[in-house]
Length: 343
Ligand code: XIL
Image (cartoon, rainbow, N blue to C red; front, side, top):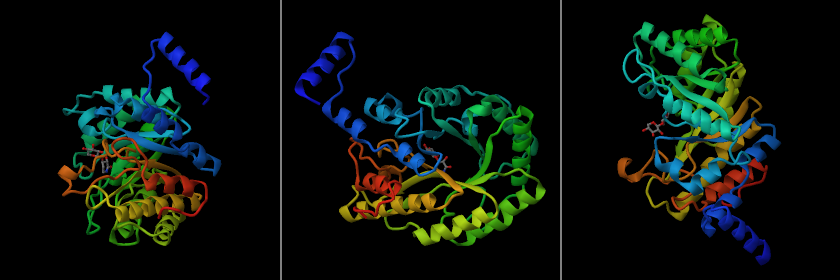
Protein backbone atom coordinates (compact mmCIF):
# COMPACT_ATOMS: atom_id res chain seq x y z
CA UNK A 1 0.00 0.00 0.00
CA UNK A 2 1.40 3.45 -0.89
CA UNK A 3 2.09 5.91 1.92
CA UNK A 4 -0.68 8.18 0.67
CA UNK A 5 -3.18 5.30 0.68
CA UNK A 6 -2.08 4.17 4.12
CA UNK A 7 -2.57 7.67 5.49
CA UNK A 8 -6.00 7.88 3.87
CA UNK A 9 -7.01 4.56 5.50
CA UNK A 10 -5.71 5.76 8.87
CA UNK A 11 -7.61 9.02 8.52
CA UNK A 12 -10.82 7.07 7.88
CA UNK A 13 -10.19 4.79 10.85
CA UNK A 14 -9.61 7.78 13.11
CA UNK A 15 -12.63 9.65 11.76
CA UNK A 16 -14.91 6.66 12.31
CA UNK A 17 -13.46 5.91 15.74
CA UNK A 18 -12.34 2.45 14.63
CA UNK A 19 -9.47 0.88 16.61
CA UNK A 20 -6.30 1.02 14.55
CA UNK A 21 -4.83 -2.47 14.21
CA UNK A 22 -1.18 -2.92 15.13
CA UNK A 23 1.15 -3.93 12.27
CA UNK A 24 1.35 -7.53 13.50
CA UNK A 25 -2.44 -7.88 13.56
CA UNK A 26 -2.78 -6.55 10.07
CA UNK A 27 0.03 -8.67 8.73
CA UNK A 28 -1.06 -11.96 10.26
CA UNK A 29 -4.68 -11.67 9.32
CA UNK A 30 -4.02 -10.44 5.80
CA UNK A 31 -1.23 -12.92 5.05
CA UNK A 32 -2.96 -15.98 6.47
CA UNK A 33 -3.46 -18.32 3.48
CA UNK A 34 -6.98 -18.68 2.17
CA UNK A 35 -7.33 -22.33 3.16
CA UNK A 36 -11.06 -22.60 2.56
CA UNK A 37 -10.82 -21.11 -0.92
CA UNK A 38 -7.89 -23.38 -1.76
CA UNK A 39 -9.71 -26.50 -0.55
CA UNK A 40 -12.88 -25.58 -2.41
CA UNK A 41 -10.94 -24.88 -5.60
CA UNK A 42 -9.88 -28.54 -5.46
CA UNK A 43 -13.44 -29.81 -4.98
CA UNK A 44 -13.67 -30.03 -1.18
CA UNK A 45 -16.65 -28.61 0.66
CA UNK A 46 -14.72 -26.68 3.28
CA UNK A 47 -11.64 -26.03 5.34
CA UNK A 48 -12.54 -25.05 8.89
CA UNK A 49 -11.51 -24.60 12.49
CA UNK A 50 -13.13 -25.32 15.81
CA UNK A 51 -13.91 -22.41 18.09
CA UNK A 52 -14.54 -22.43 21.82
CA UNK A 53 -16.62 -19.44 22.80
CA UNK A 54 -16.05 -20.25 26.48
CA UNK A 55 -12.36 -19.37 26.05
CA UNK A 56 -10.67 -15.97 25.68
CA UNK A 57 -10.11 -16.56 21.97
CA UNK A 58 -13.31 -14.73 21.11
CA UNK A 59 -11.98 -11.57 22.78
CA UNK A 60 -8.71 -11.71 20.84
CA UNK A 61 -9.01 -9.31 17.89
CA UNK A 62 -6.26 -10.79 15.76
CA UNK A 63 -7.59 -14.30 16.30
CA UNK A 64 -11.17 -13.37 15.50
CA UNK A 65 -10.18 -11.38 12.44
CA UNK A 66 -8.64 -14.57 11.05
CA UNK A 67 -11.50 -16.83 12.15
CA UNK A 68 -14.11 -14.56 10.61
CA UNK A 69 -12.68 -14.59 7.10
CA UNK A 70 -14.66 -17.10 5.10
CA UNK A 71 -11.83 -17.31 2.55
CA UNK A 72 -9.77 -18.85 5.37
CA UNK A 73 -12.36 -20.89 7.26
CA UNK A 74 -15.65 -21.97 5.70
CA UNK A 75 -16.71 -24.25 8.53
CA UNK A 76 -16.58 -24.45 12.28
CA UNK A 77 -17.15 -26.95 15.08
CA UNK A 78 -18.02 -25.84 18.61
CA UNK A 79 -15.06 -26.98 20.72
CA UNK A 80 -17.23 -27.49 23.79
CA UNK A 81 -20.53 -25.63 23.79
CA UNK A 82 -22.75 -28.36 22.36
CA UNK A 83 -21.55 -31.16 24.62
CA UNK A 84 -23.96 -32.81 27.03
CA UNK A 85 -22.52 -30.96 30.05
CA UNK A 86 -23.46 -27.68 28.43
CA UNK A 87 -26.74 -28.54 26.72
CA UNK A 88 -28.25 -30.67 29.51
CA UNK A 89 -26.38 -29.63 32.66
CA UNK A 90 -28.93 -31.42 34.84
CA UNK A 91 -31.03 -34.39 33.86
CA UNK A 92 -33.97 -33.05 31.84
CA UNK A 93 -32.87 -29.41 32.06
CA UNK A 94 -31.75 -28.10 28.68
CA UNK A 95 -29.74 -24.96 27.97
CA UNK A 96 -28.79 -24.22 24.39
CA UNK A 97 -27.60 -20.64 24.97
CA UNK A 98 -23.88 -21.17 24.38
CA UNK A 99 -24.41 -23.42 21.39
CA UNK A 100 -26.71 -20.79 19.91
CA UNK A 101 -23.87 -18.29 20.28
CA UNK A 102 -21.56 -20.49 18.25
CA UNK A 103 -24.20 -20.87 15.55
CA UNK A 104 -24.64 -17.08 15.43
CA UNK A 105 -20.88 -16.56 15.09
CA UNK A 106 -20.71 -19.10 12.28
CA UNK A 107 -23.68 -17.60 10.46
CA UNK A 108 -22.15 -14.10 10.48
CA UNK A 109 -19.47 -15.34 8.13
CA UNK A 110 -21.38 -18.02 6.28
CA UNK A 111 -19.71 -21.03 7.85
CA UNK A 112 -21.09 -24.54 7.83
CA UNK A 113 -21.35 -26.01 11.33
CA UNK A 114 -20.44 -29.57 12.30
CA UNK A 115 -22.38 -29.93 15.52
CA UNK A 116 -20.34 -31.78 18.11
CA UNK A 117 -21.56 -33.93 19.76
CA UNK A 118 -24.60 -35.74 21.10
CA UNK A 119 -23.34 -38.71 23.08
CA UNK A 120 -19.98 -39.46 24.69
CA UNK A 121 -18.88 -43.02 25.19
CA UNK A 122 -20.78 -45.06 27.70
CA UNK A 123 -24.24 -43.59 28.09
CA UNK A 124 -26.28 -46.38 29.58
CA UNK A 125 -29.77 -45.04 30.02
CA UNK A 126 -31.55 -45.37 26.72
CA UNK A 127 -34.49 -43.17 27.69
CA UNK A 128 -32.25 -40.28 28.76
CA UNK A 129 -30.17 -40.73 25.63
CA UNK A 130 -33.22 -40.60 23.36
CA UNK A 131 -34.58 -37.45 25.01
CA UNK A 132 -31.19 -35.75 24.80
CA UNK A 133 -30.63 -36.63 21.15
CA UNK A 134 -34.13 -35.69 20.06
CA UNK A 135 -34.23 -32.36 21.93
CA UNK A 136 -30.83 -31.24 20.72
CA UNK A 137 -31.34 -32.20 17.09
CA UNK A 138 -34.73 -30.51 17.11
CA UNK A 139 -33.36 -27.33 18.67
CA UNK A 140 -30.42 -26.77 16.31
CA UNK A 141 -32.14 -28.23 13.25
CA UNK A 142 -30.60 -27.38 9.91
CA UNK A 143 -28.20 -24.90 11.50
CA UNK A 144 -26.12 -28.04 11.75
CA UNK A 145 -24.86 -29.20 8.41
CA UNK A 146 -23.61 -32.40 9.98
CA UNK A 147 -23.43 -33.93 13.45
CA UNK A 148 -21.24 -36.18 15.48
CA UNK A 149 -23.85 -38.48 16.96
CA UNK A 150 -21.58 -40.78 18.94
CA UNK A 151 -18.12 -39.73 20.06
CA UNK A 152 -15.24 -42.01 21.03
CA UNK A 153 -17.16 -45.17 21.87
CA UNK A 154 -14.38 -47.70 21.35
CA UNK A 155 -11.77 -48.64 23.89
CA UNK A 156 -8.14 -49.31 22.94
CA UNK A 157 -8.70 -53.06 23.12
CA UNK A 158 -11.51 -52.77 20.59
CA UNK A 159 -14.35 -53.31 23.10
CA UNK A 160 -17.41 -51.09 22.88
CA UNK A 161 -20.91 -50.55 24.22
CA UNK A 162 -24.11 -51.73 22.56
CA UNK A 163 -26.15 -48.56 22.65
CA UNK A 164 -24.45 -46.98 19.68
CA UNK A 165 -26.95 -48.29 17.16
CA UNK A 166 -29.84 -46.88 19.20
CA UNK A 167 -28.16 -43.47 19.31
CA UNK A 168 -27.94 -43.42 15.52
CA UNK A 169 -31.50 -44.65 15.13
CA UNK A 170 -32.84 -41.94 17.45
CA UNK A 171 -30.76 -39.33 15.64
CA UNK A 172 -32.03 -40.38 12.22
CA UNK A 173 -35.63 -40.38 13.46
CA UNK A 174 -35.22 -36.86 14.84
CA UNK A 175 -33.69 -35.64 11.57
CA UNK A 176 -36.47 -37.25 9.54
CA UNK A 177 -39.12 -35.68 11.75
CA UNK A 178 -37.63 -32.29 10.82
CA UNK A 179 -37.54 -33.26 7.16
CA UNK A 180 -33.95 -32.00 7.20
CA UNK A 181 -30.71 -33.12 5.59
CA UNK A 182 -28.21 -33.36 8.43
CA UNK A 183 -25.33 -35.79 7.95
CA UNK A 184 -24.82 -38.18 10.85
CA UNK A 185 -21.28 -39.15 11.86
CA UNK A 186 -19.37 -41.43 14.19
CA UNK A 187 -16.29 -39.55 15.49
CA UNK A 188 -13.17 -41.05 17.06
CA UNK A 189 -9.40 -40.69 17.57
CA UNK A 190 -6.55 -43.00 16.59
CA UNK A 191 -8.44 -44.39 13.65
CA UNK A 192 -5.98 -43.07 11.07
CA UNK A 193 -3.76 -46.15 10.93
CA UNK A 194 -4.75 -49.80 10.45
CA UNK A 195 -5.03 -51.59 13.81
CA UNK A 196 -7.32 -52.93 16.51
CA UNK A 197 -9.34 -49.76 16.82
CA UNK A 198 -10.00 -49.35 13.10
CA UNK A 199 -10.99 -53.01 12.85
CA UNK A 200 -13.44 -52.58 15.69
CA UNK A 201 -14.93 -49.41 14.20
CA UNK A 202 -15.43 -51.19 10.90
CA UNK A 203 -16.59 -54.59 12.15
CA UNK A 204 -18.58 -53.52 15.15
CA UNK A 205 -19.82 -49.98 15.05
CA UNK A 206 -20.31 -49.30 11.35
CA UNK A 207 -21.45 -52.79 10.40
CA UNK A 208 -23.91 -52.98 13.28
CA UNK A 209 -25.38 -49.57 12.62
CA UNK A 210 -25.62 -50.16 8.89
CA UNK A 211 -27.28 -53.53 9.26
CA UNK A 212 -29.91 -52.05 11.59
CA UNK A 213 -30.94 -49.35 9.09
CA UNK A 214 -29.86 -46.35 7.07
CA UNK A 215 -28.71 -44.44 10.10
CA UNK A 216 -25.12 -43.33 9.48
CA UNK A 217 -23.59 -41.10 6.81
CA UNK A 218 -19.98 -40.85 7.71
CA UNK A 219 -16.94 -41.14 9.92
CA UNK A 220 -15.04 -38.35 11.64
CA UNK A 221 -11.29 -38.94 11.93
CA UNK A 222 -10.24 -36.72 14.80
CA UNK A 223 -6.56 -36.61 13.80
CA UNK A 224 -4.87 -35.64 17.07
CA UNK A 225 -1.27 -36.52 16.22
CA UNK A 226 2.21 -35.61 17.43
CA UNK A 227 5.46 -34.43 15.84
CA UNK A 228 7.00 -37.87 16.30
CA UNK A 229 3.97 -40.12 15.87
CA UNK A 230 1.69 -39.57 12.93
CA UNK A 231 0.28 -41.63 10.06
CA UNK A 232 1.89 -41.94 6.66
CA UNK A 233 -0.12 -41.05 3.58
CA UNK A 234 -0.18 -44.75 2.71
CA UNK A 235 -1.68 -45.70 6.07
CA UNK A 236 -4.23 -42.94 5.78
CA UNK A 237 -5.15 -44.03 2.27
CA UNK A 238 -5.61 -47.62 3.49
CA UNK A 239 -8.04 -46.73 6.27
CA UNK A 240 -9.87 -44.12 4.24
CA UNK A 241 -10.47 -46.61 1.46
CA UNK A 242 -11.94 -49.06 4.01
CA UNK A 243 -14.34 -46.37 5.22
CA UNK A 244 -15.19 -45.34 1.67
CA UNK A 245 -15.89 -48.98 0.70
CA UNK A 246 -18.68 -49.00 3.27
CA UNK A 247 -20.16 -45.96 1.58
CA UNK A 248 -19.18 -43.59 4.39
CA UNK A 249 -18.36 -39.94 3.95
CA UNK A 250 -15.14 -38.91 5.71
CA UNK A 251 -14.36 -35.73 7.62
CA UNK A 252 -11.05 -34.78 9.21
CA UNK A 253 -12.66 -33.38 12.33
CA UNK A 254 -10.08 -32.33 14.94
CA UNK A 255 -6.70 -31.86 13.34
CA UNK A 256 -3.85 -30.83 15.62
CA UNK A 257 -0.28 -32.04 16.02
CA UNK A 258 1.30 -31.67 19.44
CA UNK A 259 5.04 -31.32 19.89
CA UNK A 260 6.17 -33.86 22.51
CA UNK A 261 8.26 -31.19 24.18
CA UNK A 262 7.87 -27.45 24.17
CA UNK A 263 8.86 -24.96 23.01
CA UNK A 264 8.70 -26.99 19.84
CA UNK A 265 12.24 -27.53 18.44
CA UNK A 266 13.20 -27.01 14.81
CA UNK A 267 13.01 -30.75 14.15
CA UNK A 268 9.72 -30.89 16.05
CA UNK A 269 8.34 -28.20 13.79
CA UNK A 270 9.44 -30.20 10.75
CA UNK A 271 7.69 -33.33 12.04
CA UNK A 272 4.63 -31.29 12.83
CA UNK A 273 4.55 -29.83 9.33
CA UNK A 274 4.85 -33.32 7.84
CA UNK A 275 1.98 -34.63 9.97
CA UNK A 276 -0.35 -31.80 8.90
CA UNK A 277 0.77 -32.31 5.31
CA UNK A 278 0.09 -36.07 5.34
CA UNK A 279 -3.41 -35.86 6.77
CA UNK A 280 -4.54 -33.18 4.37
CA UNK A 281 -2.81 -34.89 1.45
CA UNK A 282 -4.75 -38.10 2.07
CA UNK A 283 -8.03 -36.21 2.34
CA UNK A 284 -7.34 -34.31 -0.87
CA UNK A 285 -6.69 -37.60 -2.67
CA UNK A 286 -9.87 -39.26 -1.39
CA UNK A 287 -13.12 -38.26 -3.07
CA UNK A 288 -15.20 -39.36 -0.06
CA UNK A 289 -13.22 -37.04 2.25
CA UNK A 290 -15.08 -33.79 1.91
CA UNK A 291 -13.59 -31.43 4.47
CA UNK A 292 -10.94 -30.76 7.07
CA UNK A 293 -11.11 -28.97 10.41
CA UNK A 294 -8.30 -27.71 12.66
CA UNK A 295 -8.87 -28.24 16.37
CA UNK A 296 -8.17 -24.54 16.78
CA UNK A 297 -5.47 -22.60 14.95
CA UNK A 298 -3.52 -20.81 17.68
CA UNK A 299 -1.44 -22.54 20.38
CA UNK A 300 -2.87 -20.28 23.04
CA UNK A 301 -6.35 -21.72 22.66
CA UNK A 302 -5.70 -25.34 21.74
CA UNK A 303 -6.63 -27.96 24.35
CA UNK A 304 -3.13 -29.48 24.59
CA UNK A 305 -1.31 -27.14 26.96
CA UNK A 306 2.17 -28.11 28.25
CA UNK A 307 1.18 -27.53 31.89
CA UNK A 308 -1.44 -30.28 31.76
CA UNK A 309 0.13 -32.60 29.17
CA UNK A 310 3.63 -33.39 30.50
CA UNK A 311 5.21 -30.55 28.55
CA UNK A 312 3.57 -31.44 25.21
CA UNK A 313 1.79 -28.70 23.30
CA UNK A 314 2.29 -26.08 20.57
CA UNK A 315 -0.14 -28.19 18.54
CA UNK A 316 -1.51 -25.72 16.00
CA UNK A 317 -0.28 -23.81 12.95
CA UNK A 318 0.19 -20.47 14.76
CA UNK A 319 2.37 -19.61 17.74
CA UNK A 320 0.66 -17.87 20.62
CA UNK A 321 1.64 -14.47 19.22
CA UNK A 322 -0.19 -15.36 16.02
CA UNK A 323 2.90 -15.79 13.85
CA UNK A 324 2.98 -18.69 11.42
CA UNK A 325 4.81 -21.99 11.86
CA UNK A 326 6.21 -24.18 9.07
CA UNK A 327 3.06 -26.26 9.52
CA UNK A 328 0.96 -23.45 8.04
CA UNK A 329 3.20 -23.35 4.97
CA UNK A 330 2.83 -27.14 4.66
CA UNK A 331 -0.97 -26.86 4.84
CA UNK A 332 -1.03 -24.20 2.15
CA UNK A 333 1.32 -26.19 -0.07
CA UNK A 334 -0.63 -29.41 0.17
CA UNK A 335 -3.88 -27.62 -0.64
CA UNK A 336 -2.19 -26.13 -3.70
CA UNK A 337 -1.06 -29.63 -4.75
CA UNK A 338 2.61 -28.71 -4.19
CA UNK A 339 5.30 -30.75 -2.49
CA UNK A 340 6.25 -29.77 1.05
CA UNK A 341 9.13 -27.31 1.23
CA UNK A 342 9.25 -27.31 5.05
CA UNK A 343 8.78 -31.00 5.90
C1 XIL B 1 -11.75 -31.06 24.14
C2 XIL B 1 -11.82 -29.53 24.21
O1 XIL B 1 -11.04 -28.97 23.18
C3 XIL B 1 -11.34 -29.06 25.57
O2 XIL B 1 -11.48 -27.65 25.70
C4 XIL B 1 -12.12 -29.76 26.67
O3 XIL B 1 -11.60 -29.40 27.93
C5 XIL B 1 -12.05 -31.27 26.50
O4 XIL B 1 -12.49 -31.63 25.21
N1 XIL B 1 -11.88 -35.31 21.32
C6 XIL B 1 -13.06 -34.64 21.14
C7 XIL B 1 -13.20 -33.23 21.58
O5 XIL B 1 -13.97 -35.20 20.49
O6 XIL B 1 -14.51 -32.93 22.01
C8 XIL B 1 -12.22 -32.89 22.67
O7 XIL B 1 -12.30 -31.49 22.93
C9 XIL B 1 -10.83 -33.30 22.24
C10 XIL B 1 -10.74 -34.78 22.01
